[in-house]
Length: 229
Ligand SMILES: Nc1ncnc2c1ncn2[C@@H]1O[C@H](COP(=O)(O)OP(=O)(O)OP(=O)(O)O)[C@@H](O)[C@H]1O
Image (cartoon, rainbow, N blue to C red):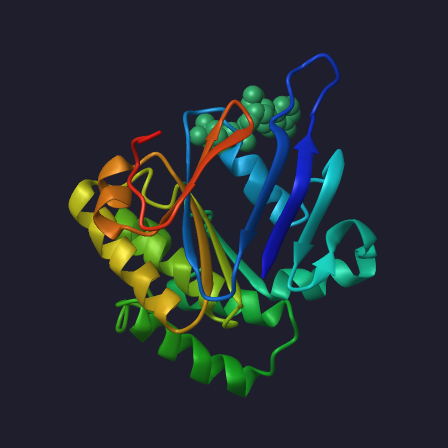
């Protein structure tokens, strides 16, 4: 589903690369944590998969396509197969919960009757049934992240990328968000999540890929946060 072969990403010459000769493969339906200290390259890895950044060398394949060979015309097609959620939620503040989620379908041209059916279903799935008309500022942090997850998942993408999705949430709320991501993963969606949250990684016992200064230093099935090398 996702494959990086010997990928190096340098943002500026003279600086050490953000990723240095990283090779990793994620199969369809997997749940993978990317862990590592601040600056180790986690977000860079996710941005390469989203084709928001270009690898300096090496190749990135997503859903069978070499991203370097993908014309800019085809990028929207690629992005439709991926949802992304972030630490800071990134909701549209002047739109309701419903409108925030519906927007993701409007921009890809889905008809109104589909939107009016799929958005409430997805809000129900993430535990926000009945909150369609709230504004983002009327929601707790955990609820705002649920809206962001609904927006990322409403088009049922094959891949969900999450960059520190629990970074702004307290531990109890974070557990709820992880349960939701786990449920989405069980529907067959591949999930790659960058995180600093050791408790969550230790509880979930999923595959753990650890980065250190841009190097992949550990790839462990049913891993924990702390390195056991
Ligand atoms: N747009 C950019 N321009 C220049 N350097 C960058 C850019 N983005 C990231 N970097 C550098 O690349 C390295 C890896 O950053 P990255 O954001 O991928 O790390 P991270 O592991 O996600 O960190 P954090 O946990 O703090 O988000 C860092 O040294 C960072 O300063």
